Length: 134
Image (cartoon, one colour):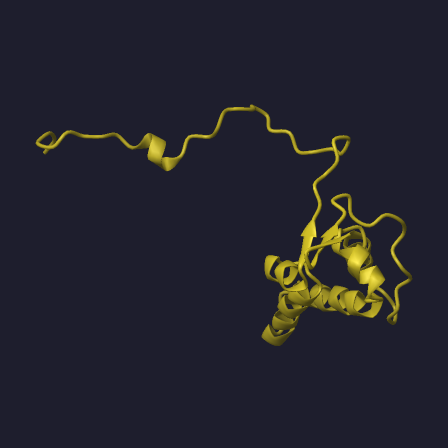
């Protein structure tokens, strides 16, 4: 859905099976990434723009970048893909995409203790009146 030049992607993500893998033989890691990516909200836009090949190339590059012996230029390519596919905040802004609000029936994360927050470092500080101490 478009509003004011922005496209709102569904919070629940893309439904249905992932498209067929378009590259040569797929590794197990690439298959896991492929399934995960095609369930994201951004996948709705990728499908509309027929970006199956781009997403597959991102999967392959990301799987390579995860290896300990990976070259720096491969990691830079991953960052570029993240932005161009709208998987980073900068990429979402550049593509003018936003994720819609989850409907009331969606499972939302629930905090364990509503209304309570964890103490911060500031909470542990003690004010010492001047002149006291050493």
